[in-house]
Image 1 (spheres, one colour):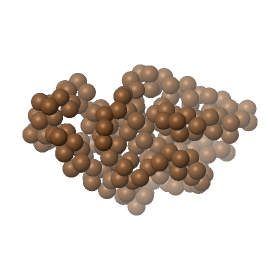
Image 2 (image 1 turned 180 degrees about the vertical axis):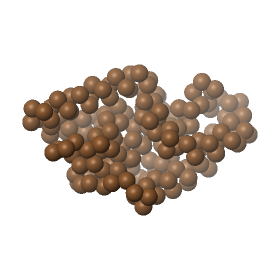
Image 3 (image 1 turned 60 degrees about the horizontal axis):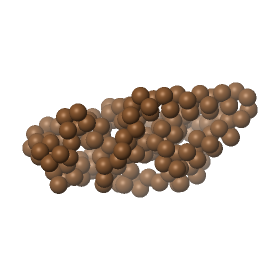
Image 4 (image 1 turned 60 degrees about the vertical axis):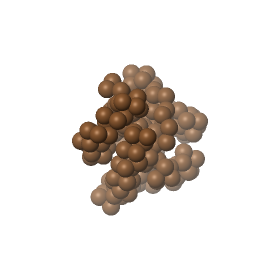
Length: 182
């Protein structure tokens, strides 16, 4: 695991709105495929804002063009967070809450991390959420190229589908804790 540069929340949000509008506008004039491929290309190149936008489209679906797919939503959101998208990390905080609470309840971990300069009081939430996303991406072996190739099939949220993400998050707790104090 390593620290990533962060995409500022406002910059990430504004980029997200721009990308989303481009895809929606394109769908209204019959050019969805072109716009979605362009968005996917940016996501493949590591654009954390494009990755977050793909997560959005898979969370909602786009009637007539794209089916709702919870697996792809979670995978793209985790990648966006792992790549330092602060807007994505804010949205994903609810999912990460349990793991982050465990870290924050362990005063020794935080004190050591603060003393070593691994986190600051100002950036602790983003840094720790980012570390969780990185660890989860590694655990789940998430790869943008494989995600891009995924079939356009509907996968609704269910406890069974969500279980692998919860397990990945829970297994990340000791990894994040170890990284913070090392």
